[in-house]
Length: 580
Image 1 (cartoon, helix red, strand yellow):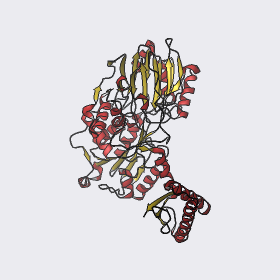
Image 2 (cartoon, rainbow, N blue to C red):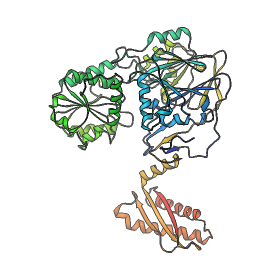
Image 3 (cartoon, rainbow, N blue to C red):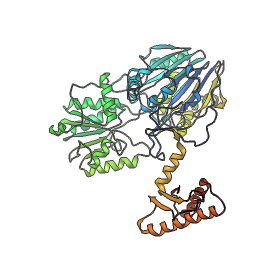
Image 4 (tube, rainbow, N blue to C red):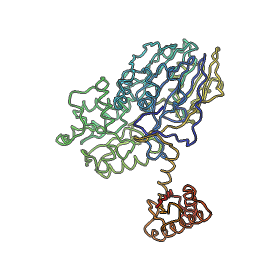
C-alpha cells in the first residue's frame, strides 16, 4: 500500500522486492521492533498478543549526512501488510517527531487504527494529521496519567516520566502473559520545571506486582552519573536575561517546550515581550498555549515583525529556531544578515540553549562566528549550563530498573553502542545474559508460558523507507548513489544523433557537463571526451551491436575508464541516443 500520495518514498536497498515475512500468528506473546533499535529516531515497537497487534510510536528519523536532499526516514511496516484488521491500537509515548513524526504517512497504511496518548502528545499528532487533511479519518483518544484503558486483550496505563517535553509517558501494558513496560524517552529530574516529577510510586508498585519485560531508553547509557536538572538551565537563563542590557535572542529546539515555558516566565519577570521566529516554534508554542502548558498575558507572545523595532531593546526577547546551524533557520539567517525582520546589532545577547548534534558542530560554529562578526554577545553550552538532555544517564537507568524490577530487559532507542552499554549496565546489577535481549529492527522475541524468552528463527523484512519531497514512489539507493556521485564529481551528458535504421552517427556527440571540468581544461578535455565516446560507439556498432542499451553501456564504460585514468574523477555519465 502506498505510504502517501503526496510523498516520494524510496527503498534504499535497491534490490528486487522479497516476499513479505510476517511474525507467526497464533497464541502467545511476541515483541518486535520496527525502528529505533539501530538508530536514534524512527521509533516503532510492536506487541503481538495472540495475533492482535499493538504499535508503540510511529516516529521519523532525520537523515544522515550522506543522504543528500532527503527529508527524513520512517519505519518500514510492510511486515504488517495483510494484518491491518488485527492492529488494535497505536500508543504514543510523547510528542517528539522521532516518536510521532510519521503518523501522516503510516496511519493510512495501517487503515487508521485507534490512537492513544496524553493530552499534549495527541494535540501534536492531530496537528500533523491536520496538515494533510487526515484528521477526520483518524480515531484519536486522549488519556490521563494512571487511567487504565482496556483495548482488546490488554490493559494500557500511561505513567508520568520527565523528558524535555510535557506529558511524556511510560506505558504499562498488561497482557494475559504478563506485563510489559515501555519507558519511552525519560530521565529522572528531581526538580523539573513546569510539570510534576516522574511517577516513582506507581513504577515501584508495578515492580511489586511483577513485570515480565521492560523496553527502556538507551540514549545516554554510556554516560556515568545522573542527568542534569532542567532547574539549573532555567537559573542560568534567568541570569542572562536579567543582566542583558540589549535584546536577548534565545535559540533552542522548538520541541523543548519545558525550556521555552521557562524563557517565557523569565521574560515576563523582566517585562520583555517575546517574539517568535520559525514556523515549527510558532506552531508548538501556539499548541502549548492553547492547552495551558505555556502561560502568558494576552499579546506578550507575538510573531517577529517590524513593529518590534519600535520597542526599547531591553523590552525585547526573541525565540528562534536554528540552534543546530540549519542554513534556512532563523538563527543562521540572522548571522548572515539575511533575516527578513531581525538584524543583529552590537549589544544583542544571543543564547544557544542546546548542544550540537553529532555532525552539526561545524555548522553551529559557523553560525556562532557570524553572530560574533555582527557584534552580538554569544553564549553557548560550552561555557555556561544552557542545555541538558531529556534522556537519563546511567544512574537514571539503574533507578528505573530497580523500581520496575522486570524479569527481562530490552534496551531500545539508540545506536548499537548505546544499547550494548545499557545491556552491560543491567548485567552489572545481576541480570543474566538470557534475560537481557539486544535486538535489532525486525527481530522477534517470543515468550513461553513460564515467562522465558527466546529469539525467533524468523525475522521480519526491514528496509529504509525515505521521504523526499512530493512526488511518486521510486528506488532510493539508485537515487542517493546518483546524488553522491554528482556531489563529488559532477555529471556529464552526451547526446548522440544517429540514423534510425543503421544507428550510424550523423555527427560527433554533443557534450554538456556540470561540476566536472574547470575552465582551464574545458576545451582539451571536452575534445578528448568526444573522441573517446565516438570511438567506443563506433567500435560497438562495427561489431554488429545495434541495441541502444548496449551502445550506451559501451560509451559509459569507456568514459569511466578515461576519467579514472586522465582526471582521477568519477562523474555521472548520461548518454542519450536521438534517432533521426
